[in-house]
Amino acid sequence: MASGGSSSTPSSQAAESSEVDLKTILWSHVEILDRGDATGGNVKWRCKFCSQISTSSYSRVKAHLLKISNQGIGLCKEVTVPILAQLKDEVNRAAAELERRKPKKVSLPHTASSSSGLGLQEKRKRKGPLTALEKAWALDLRNQLDATIARMFYSAGLSFNVTRNPHYQESYTFAANHSISGYVPPGYNKLRTTLLQKERAHIETLL
Image (cartoon, rainbow, N blue to C red; front, side, top):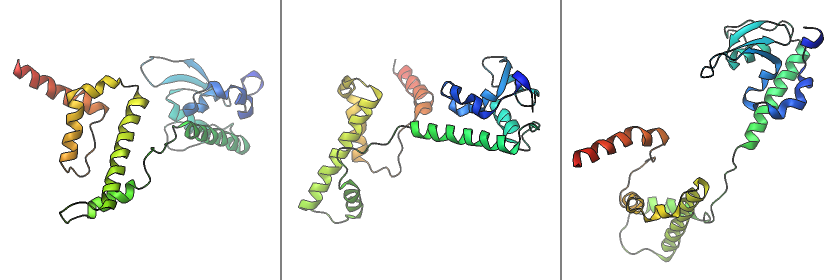
C-alpha cells in the first residue's frame, strides 16, 4: 500500500463525502492530475493506494479500485480485502443516499375509487344511462385528472395563463373523445426535434 502522505483509506475520506458527487464517490480515492478537455469524460489520475497513473473515465476508476475484471484497466494490488469491503460499503451508502434523495411519489387528492372506476369503465359494454354508482366513479375520475393536471402546473412552475391557450383545451378534448390505447404524450426530445420541425414546416407552407 502507498505509504506516507500518498496513502488513503475509505475512513479518511468520510468527512469530505458530503462534497463529493455521490454518483462518482470513488473519485476521492484518486488524485486528479489533468482534467483534459472539459467536454470529454476522461481525466488523468493517480491511484492513492498503488500510485498507478491512468487516463480514463470514472467507470475504470471504479473497476481499478473495486477489482472488477475485464474493464480495460489493471486491478489495484494495494486494495486489500478489508479495504475493498470498505470501498464497496462506501459505494453502497452513496447509492442508498441517492435513492433517498429521489422525489417521493405523493398521492393525488382524489384517488379513492379511481382504479375501480377505470375497471368498471373498461368493462361497461351496454348502452344507456349511467347508474348512480357509475356516475360517482366518473366524477372521481374527473377529479383525479384535474388533480394530475394541477400538479403538473404546480411542480413545473407553469403559468396559469397556459389554460387560456386554445390548444390546451383542444388537446384534452381530443384525448377524451378518442380512445387511443397505450398513448404516451411526446417527451422532451420529440417536442424539441421532430414535432418542432413538423410544426415549423407546416407554418411555412401557410405563409
